[in-house]
Length: 172
Image (cartoon, rainbow, N blue to C red; front, side):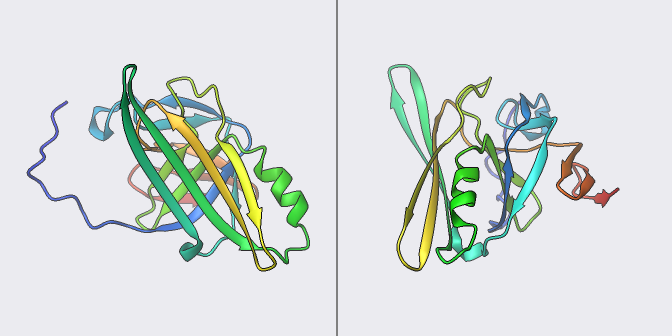
């Protein structure tokens, strides 16, 4: 596959939502149209949407070249109020996350949790709090850059939602 680097990349969307996956099976996408093996499809996936304001979400990625190849360090940070009555339960729940879906305003979703082809290590979760805010930080090292979820369907907590690659969706 050849990429035409002379074409302008569309305007950058912003992060607007986080989805949590506690179980799922990721498989590399084999679609040439979207970049082979950087994107994934999910099976047996139930997405638990997390309410956070878009201004409190930060996504970072850096790379380092080593003798074994390029290693990417990826991080997702979001902030919640410390005064949450279920704060302790939420923090315990965050530590069990296997994957994250980072939804952008253009409806695409970054896939966070893919450390290599087989995703055999979940992201590390760290929390820190003061009297006003609790910061949750997920970090992982990966052999590949962040990709997108290319998904035909997956269930949300309240039912089944079909999401098509062209962005169309409907709930059942």
